[in-house]
Image 1 (cartoon, rainbow, N blue to C red):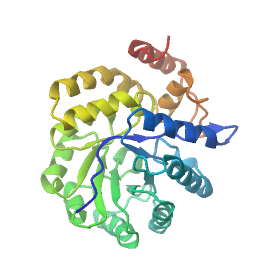
Image 2 (tube, rainbow, N blue to C red):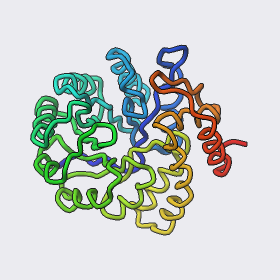
Image 3 (cartoon, helix red, strand yellow):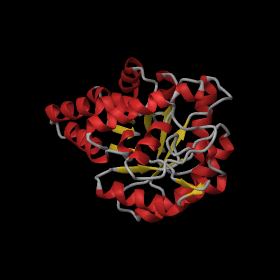
Amino acid sequence: MKRVFQGSMVAVVTPFKDGRVDEAKVRELVEFHIKSGTDVLVPCGTTGESPTLSHDEHRRVIELAIQTVNKRIPVVAGTGSNSTAEAIDLTRFAKNAGADGALVVLPYYNKPTQQGLIAHCRAIADAVELPLILYNIPGRTGINMLPETLAALADHPNIVGMKEATGNLEQMTHDIVLCGAKLSFLSGDDTLTLPLMAVGGKGVISVVANIVPRDVADLTRAFLSSDWKRARELHLKLFPLCQAMFCETNPIPVKTAMALMGMINGELRLPLCPMSEANLNKLKGALRAYGLIG
């Protein structure tokens, strides 16, 4: 039986202080999410600024998250790379550190063929006995894993899910038609959490849950317990805030929001930079409307 990851899985930010990982703040955020009802912690994803973490920092953030969680909730570590060998190495590290699973983004920049995607994912799954959630985000990677390609991987015992961030509900539905009995599907876009769950998804790997974890957890739990009315109410309440989280490149808005809320200092690493004044005003407006800042 494959492991099922579901509910509100937060793609947690990586806090920095004076250019270095702020380890005390990492621990603080982990505790915040556990107290707020987050189901699964996902460090070192896109929202965690993994592209600018050194290999040592990447490993340390995974290790720190696992140690701080201390088995209270599952930890799914971001271990993807455009180098298959590097992805295997990171995934093996995550397993040895005690991760419950790994989030494996599809190879970026080198644009493999569909057969190359199959070979890449199968190589990682063959090399490390750890539940893997594949991550399809063509806007970042430049390549889209087609439903038929995913179907060729769905029987692998170590491939348990797909984070879908194509923004294409038709493709997501096709994925679920072909593989829904074999894989758990998780939204990679906060605005599409409820629509994806309506066609068979199990939850979300969320950005907005960095600032409103309780509401995202309540939305997914309401849906999974068949309280459709409550799930829809929360979806509509969250929708403008979710849109604001992507008015500039993620994680610029969410880290800025967290700074405005006093959660972190908001420090980013180049090439990410502070928000434009116009978008900052939009973000502040969404936070005020939600009651998160005065």
